[in-house]
Image 1: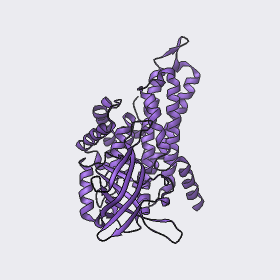
Image 2: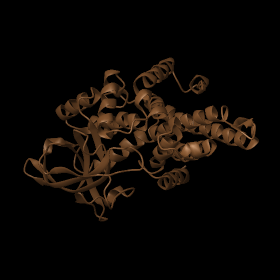
Image 3: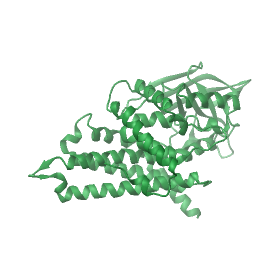
Image 4: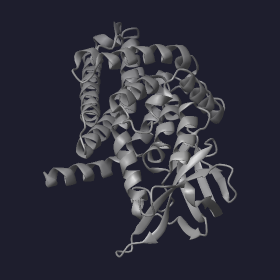
Length: 384
């Protein structure tokens, strides 16, 4: 179906509209033709990173020193990529998540080395925050970093880390002290994948293709110059990263939901039951109407948040959380309805809507669960 949404809104510049058209063409040419493949996930991710780098797309995710990310461009790209492949979207956004703190606070020589390699697709990035006992409660991190001469020694475990085993470097958050309330004082470090004492202890199998796993740090000596920011800056850097990318999670959800709606319309206008097209049955029409309305509402919330961030909003915490919350929840409902409209065909392994059904579920959890987003929204509302 022709997507007229971007042309109807005042949020975008002519450059954004040109970008959207270019990305759509790129996705059709480079991503869609292999999106349904189920072979080696890690190899496919590397191929996507290479393709995105060659097309110059990674520079929209990797923040250059002294410049701001264009959040509207980030969202447009994520929506277009996830329309076709959640793995291609992951390949794109992890280059940004894994480098954002580095771009903001790493020493110049460390920053320039990793930022250039990530933007050129020469090195794959990862963001290592979550632990077995520290998911939404970031301050509960147990991984420690102890100063020892000209290095910090890291010990601990990270869990559910995207790009584990694929990444060439990781932005790792560890406890370097404890505040007066007993909460972790966090600091951030760049850790190369080949540094002694670092290992990938587990590749975790998820319901959808996703390179993810568990990291181990055992006496891992990281040069002090590879600390990102100063001691104790880690929590703020992690939150800034989340705040910058949160609305774009909603954009990825919108891409999947838009694909589900297109597939549902296509099927409903070609499949007959009881002598009539599915699309002629009023209950199917009701589902399609609900899907389209929820999708439009989700995209409006996403691009409002992105626009406000680009216009210099110091804090768009509430708007970004609303976008992430509503878009991911709505997308799950939209994909579920698409499967229902397809009936038994929607349950066939490898069909587009079946793949979307598996891929969409994680978005309500990572980068802040729906429940956490509600707490954030309420706390911001009560401050106003």
